[in-house]
Image: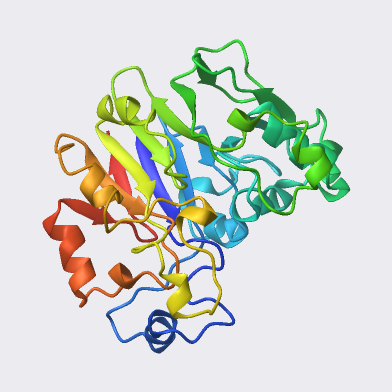
Length: 311
């Protein structure tokens, strides 16, 4: 498997357009300590022909243009090596990029029934995905089952990639109307993914609510784990915005502190741990900071745009 990090920041990217925090200022000034980052986006392939996207970031168009492997073939007037999209939640920075894929292109989108219903039933703008011939095809996850990932146009061919969704006991986004949220299954709100080519596995969880540890056994089965690196500390946002929610209240397990990911996963030394979806305020993004050094010393990799992993 080839796993390409197209983007590595949380919602808003780095620098964030309306923020002058230390990290954003350093990124704007290109002083070498804080790298600019687009919003989190992963692409993977097992055959170098069909690529699958994990979530669909608001920066997806520029990320595709910056990645030659995702360019359409010169042998035909229209087409793409992007075969499908796998969604872990309905957060805006995970689904907005679907609108960049609306240009009459047949695709398969994998999601829980709850996430599918939010995208297709609460916002008519996403109906533009139905204009292709055939229209975009949605495929629901079945918890406990490993599903094949395959292009919509070749369902009969063996699938080199397989995916399993792991419920994380998270919450649906605040923009979902309350009455609609009440009829959706809670376990379908946020999932982690285990991706496999039959030989190697990797784990993807850019959001970890922190109120369940059922995902840990799945991580232990993997060689590589992309894990929630949104916040360094639980009260990180309060330092820059009065009255802000804590990391846990926003559905993200912080990296540091009691019960944080550094502590929780210190014994998982056989898994290569990569922190992704970092908020612009996260001090570990400053490569001269003590927090950055703590991550490196603990055996973690901090994701940045353009990284590639081969399993």
